[in-house]
Length: 262
Image (cartoon, rainbow, N blue to C red; front, side, top):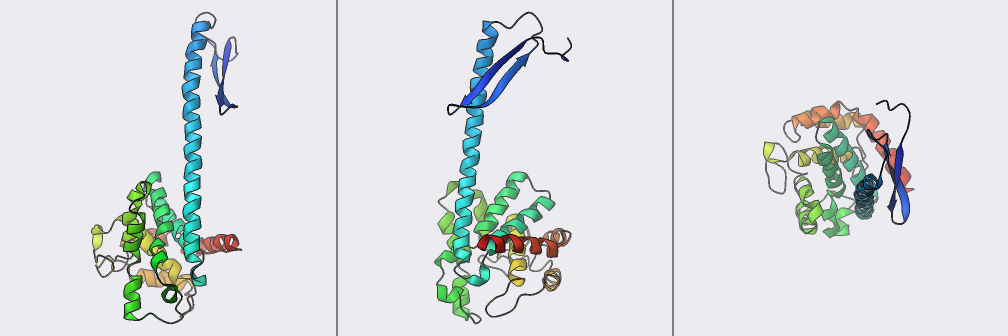
């Protein structure tokens, strides 16, 4: 039969939380008119659809709430040092862009964003006189700072929804050549999450002012990253990152984080 014209129609409202959220339509039954049995069946389908849509909306709202809380937490950590304001969010977004470009799944890309956002959460346990020291750190102070990935793992270890993101946080200071920390693992033993976040973290750190040095230009930072490709950084991650116009990305992210701080 032709469906160019509506000859018979049943409309079942989808009511969620005492407010309409949609409507289920059935049109042009093949044989005969719609009857009470049809309406009961469609009503049952509509009830199931309503439950699904309401739960989906609640889940989405819960996800947004969780992300907002995580962003607030990391912003408070960054704010301990005026030189790192906005750092975690920039690292998270750069990591997300690299993951997308490398063809990782949307779910894994989202996990990398959240891991990037939380990569420095272990610094919440660092003394402020070390984090904000205007000179280079002593060996003892540097050993203290190097504990922050493991502190983050302990802080987040009991939060089940974050379980799949902890490895990326723990390994973002590992190096391909095995000279990183805290475990000194190398090559493919470092998960892709840690390799991506580690590069984004270094690029943002190099292009940010520090109390003991001025920021490098994006071109200078790119040159440093290229120089250490295959040693400190994963070569495939570096190649992907350099395809993306890091200068333009950094300019956009600095504009966003500066606006948010203001």
